[in-house]
Amino acid sequence: MCGGAINNLEWYTFDVFCAVSGKLISVLLMAASFCALGGKKTYKKLEKRALNMKIFFGLTSATLVSALLWVLPGTAAAQGGPYVEGKAPSGELVQVMISSRPTFKYPRRAQRMGIEGFVVLAFDVNEEGELVDLRVTDSKPRLVFDKAATQYIKKFKFQPPTLDGSAVYASDITMRMPFRLE
Image (cartoon, rainbow, N blue to C red; front, side):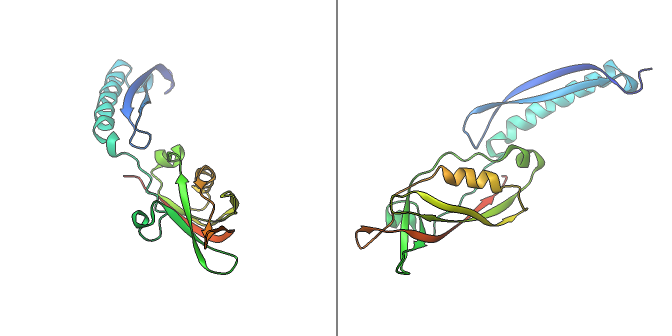
């Protein structure tokens, strides 16, 4: 008797459509036959489970994960595109237009563990449209999504904020990013 040690390993690879990236990804499933639990009989059960997993992933992959990112205070369509609001040095509210943002990727570990939450970010945008002083002001669960959120926002491209036709420094911009699995 081998005392529960693994004596046979086989990897199953399934191509699954990822709702976040819009691409096919490979899902690896390791099937192991434990000699102490029945050898080939157990292996056949695991093989059947692998097939069921393939069916499960095939049916749910289109809605498996999506990150809901709400960054738009007010009606962005009426303003000509997505924007965030900050304060000009005079104290007046100023809109900072988001000219581009990358495709969002849900953190793999949080996805595997089924974790959801949010991150609140604060930052400024200078007269050239560059992100300045990015910081996390709140997050739940703490530290799980902070890195993903800050890396994502750093890739945003902003138009220089303007007030009365002149470029201004916009401060006190906040953005709440919910992380939800669908």
